[in-house]
Image (cartoon, rainbow, N blue to C red; front, side, top):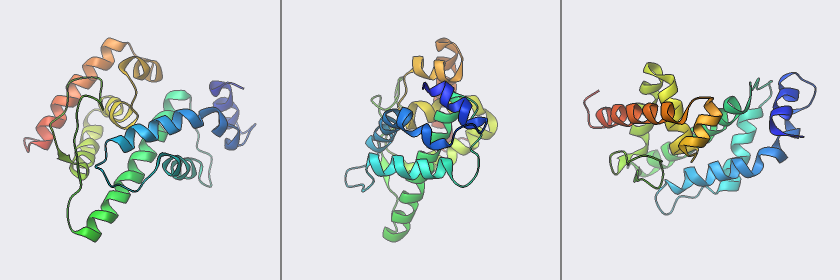
Length: 183
């Protein structure tokens, strides 16, 4: 069974969400590894654990209602991001210090965002960007948190690669301003 077929069968209730996991597990693990690479040394989350926690969050007790590949992988990237942020908040509260990451070009397909910003500040800025331009925020989530290339993002979002590049450029500039205190 292919991913799109499985998503449709889960969405319509003909199959439980569990049929989807074997089909997307490798992709989810790749997403988790990409997100965890952004964390500083010494973090305790592992890709396998993040995938399983995100899957539990994605499926939950109710119908997830995924409407295709884009929706599913966007939801997966968001769930992983939220789990990482929650973990960092817990650790930050316990240690009374911020945890920072380096945003470099290995984590995104375009030139780097500002170096060494607080993960929690990035999350807050990304939430503000989402309210202003949801598509640009989705490009950031899929690129930075999902580890997807522009071409992969274009396929998932059903946009041209050039449009994705423009959305990334806008989001990068917007986040730079937000993180430097100009927004």
